[in-house]
Each structure stands twice: as structure tokens, then as C-alpha cells.
Amino acid sequence: MFKKTTLPNGLRIITVPMEGTKAVTVLVLVGTGSKYETKDINGISHFVEHMFGKGTKKRPTQLKVFEDIDRVGGQFDFSTSKEYTAFWTKVHFKFFDLALDWLSDVILNSKFEKKEIEKEKRVIVEEIKHYLDNPAVYIWDIWEKLLYGDQPAGWLILGKRDNILKFKRKDFLEYLKNHYSSKNIVVCVAGKIEPEAVETKIKKYFRQLNQVEPKQKLRVVEKQKRPQVSISFKKSDQTHLCLGTRAFHLSHPLRYAQSLLATILGRCPSSRLINSIRTKAGLAYQVYTVSEAYTDTGYLASYAGVAHKNVKKTISLILKEYKIIKNTKVKKAELQKAKDYVKGRLSLSLETSDAQALFYGMQELLENRILTIKQIFKKIDDVTPDDIQKVARDIFRPERLNLALIGPFKDKKKFEKLLLL
Image 1 (cartoon, rainbow, N blue to C red):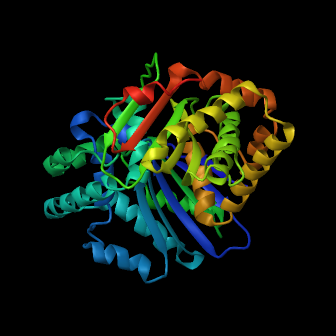
Image 2 (image 1 turned 90 degrees about the vertical axis):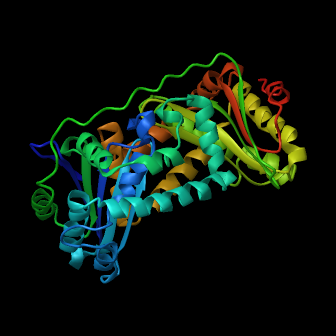
Image 3 (image 1 turned 180 degrees about the horizontal axis):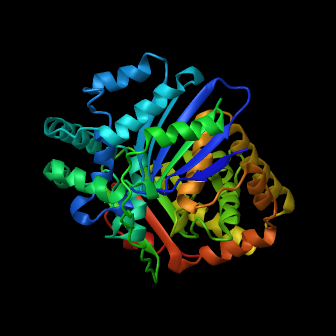
């Protein structure tokens, strides 16, 4: 069972003792990301994350930073999203003190040296090029830009090249002062631990955290009155498309029904869209449906990579399945299969200490509350066929439809004509 403690400075500590493991994961989650940026600093959240680990006074070089975890066979990773930034390390429980010392040192004492900033600019510019050249991934950014437009929710997490090249050391220090605070940080430790001892050590290692009120993100504004299409022209071997609709945010009461709807449509190998588009029609190698829920907005969308000549047919088949599930109530057996799939995948995913840390830490950071797996299973089990149909009827409407494509096309109108339900 997890335990949550909030320190007087606002830092939240979550401990998750686990039996049958010799591992321990230390996870630090910060409530900031690209949705907290303004246009002139778009990309800085990700750049800041890159600069952690470039050297501290205690560990003066990146090599020394990395060696301290390498020498005990540990693992670590840092990542930036739209609504949070994550830092974690996983070690044998004997090296727990090292893990805490290492991660707190990296977060609190990284030097942000000018020469390292200039060097990392080149690295990030190459990362942007690599990302933009990966259409199966980049299509999701085109999709979100189509939904949210010129506001933080619609911008690239990586930022733009011009921004990256102009950042100065003072920009990073200002960002850290405004967005890294004990009041928006969660430290979660999972694995072979003694919770009380862990709390005492976290108080020691993270006592220097900034305590100012962190800056908040702008609320996403959503406006749509008719179907929308966005095309990124590319002479590619395959067209990549995302077709879907605006849906519900993380705290919406129909969030679990939305997730199950996506599962029925295209999250498991026996789902409707995979059966229709891949198994029966043979149009795509990869096809799937995503249910995304941010803190203030969400969507449901289906992806497919298909031959250019099959794009229209694929779009028609996706819309056909949307229309069927909107107009015809799902059978209890199919819904139960989806529930069992979601619960089974979640259970299997939580076997490691890093997964447990993310499971509890992310709930606390983004929702300010934690449900146990048993409580989540109860919410999943409570979803009815009526709930699935209600979600489908709410979201599968022409004025909510959006289509993003990467391929050798320029005429949006011929695709807009297809977006009918």
C-alpha cells in the first residue's frame, strides 16, 4: 500500500513498498512542460531537461554523472511532456542512498554552463530533424496542432530551431526559478524500501528546493464548428493519417468509458478497426486507436499507415466503425473483453518498481489524488454499454471530426468531403 506525505514546504512524497523485488526506483515529477511555455520560449522545458546531468560541483562532467549510476548497474532516464517533466533512476536497494544523492544533486545543482548550452543546441537541432523525419510519430504533433492551433497545447515539445539557437543561460535560470518548486514536485520511491526511512532521507536531500509559487499554464481554448483537415506534404512511400475527434479530459466522469471505447475500436489485436482495416481489407500493417486525456482536454483518434491509393478507403472504414459504435450498442461480451484487456495490461505493466512509481506519482501530480488499482478496476467494471454509446454519441459528430495526414497531397477539400457521420 502506498503512503503520501506532504512536507511543510509543499513537497509531496509517495512511498510504495514492494515485496519480491531487490530494486528501488526514485522518481521526481515536476508539474511543468511545454504547455507552460510562451511562444518565445517554446522548447525550453525540453532543453532544460537536457541540461540536467551535464555536470554539478560534486560531479563536474556528464561522464562523471553517468558513471555514478553505471558503476552500480543502475538505470535512469529523463523526459519532457506537455504537462510534466520526469526524472528517475532505478538501482539495487543497497544503492538507494546513492540514487537519492545522485538525482537530487542533478536536479538541484546542475551548473548550466554556457559552453555546455551551446554544445547541446546542436544536439537538440539534430533531434528536431530526426523527429520531423519520423512521420509515424510526427503525425501526432500535426494532429494536436490541428486541434489546438497556435497555443501551447498545439506546439512541439521540442520547440523550433530558431528558439533553441537563441536561448541563453539566463533563460534557463529564469525558467527554473518560475517552474521548479517544492509546491509542484512529487518524489515517489517504489521497491524494497522502509517508508519512514525514505521520507527522512528525502527531506535531507531535497531541502534546498525552491519554494516560490510556480507559474501556471494557460487553459486550452477549443473552438471547432466543422470538420477540419491538416495536410503535411511529403513525398513518402506511405501516407500516415490520424482521424478522430475531441473528447474528454482526465477528470471527466466518462474518462474510463472513453478509454474502453478506444480499446473496442483499436487498442487490442482483436479490436474492430484492426479486424476491418488490417485483417479483412489488408490495407495497413499498423493501425490503432488512442484515447488521450490531458488535465484540461482530451481526444480519441485512430492512426493508420497506408498506401497512398488506399487513403480514402481507410478513412471510410474508420468512419464506418465510428458510426456503427455510435448507433448500435456494444454487446456485453465485447465490452467485457475490453475491460479484461485493459485490466490485464495494467496489471502486467505494474510488476516493476519504475512502473509502480509512475503509476502513483503521475496520479498525484496530474490529478492531485491517487486511486489504487482495485479502485481503478471498480471504475472500469462499472462502465456499461449505455456509457460506451453515450461517449460515442457525444464525440462522434461531424463538427468534432479532425483528420491529419502526412503524404503527397495538397488538396484538403477532397478529404473534408469524406468527414461525414
